[in-house]
Length: 78
Image 1 (cartoon, rainbow, N blue to C red):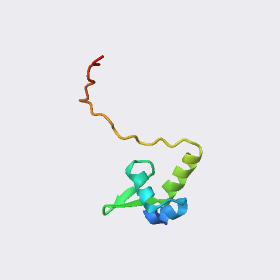
Image 2: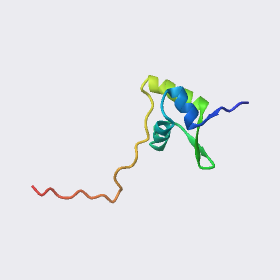
Image 3: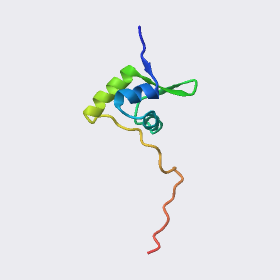
Image 4: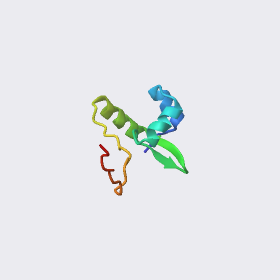
């Protein structure tokens, strides 16, 4: 059983993107990744599946929570 693990540099080379851009995509939750000893890594199989989903527009990005539950709208001053 072989598990192919990629670094941001290796994945960037495959996708024709900079390592910086790959890490940004990971930070935003746009691309599947995991951490090993605090370093971002990418499972080649998961990336292949992600690419297939991207091609068909089926990948749902995990959006960051923009507003807390405690957010209260201010009344209109008009």
